[in-house]
Image 1 (spheres, rainbow, N blue to C red):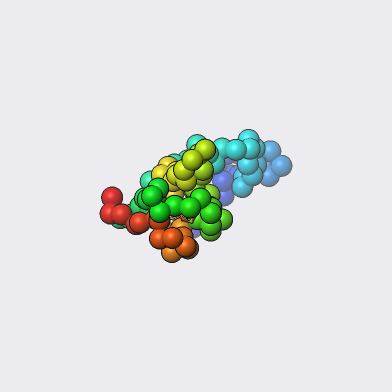
Image 2 (image 1 turned 90 degrees about the horizontal axis):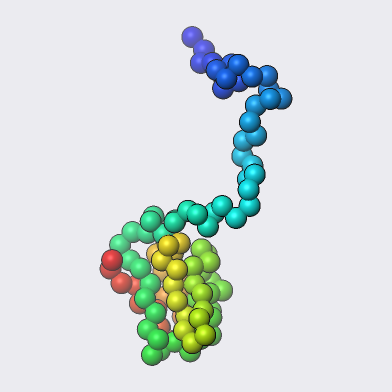
Length: 99
Ligand code: SF4
Ligand code: SF4
């Protein structure tokens, strides 16, 4: 016995189906706190060692590092704890700390 397609269930012809796989409103990704996926370790910046080179910002795959006027900070709402920033920091200013 075959399963009914979504079109059959909704009783709509294909050209009246809602558009799927498309972002209809830009910028909605900021609403999702993907940092919730982080497990075990989070990066913590030691501001005494940080020289503001921003290599961590360049390497972070989740764009979760930002700078203020005087410091580099982590956006924990989006950081997934991969540790790349810690590995790439030339002064070892980022420690991966157990949450
Ligand atoms: S890579 Fe290290 S020293 Fe450079 S800005 Fe980031 S934390 Fe600071
Ligand atoms: S741990 Fe990974 S995701 Fe989090 S700030 Fe560092 S590089 Fe970015």
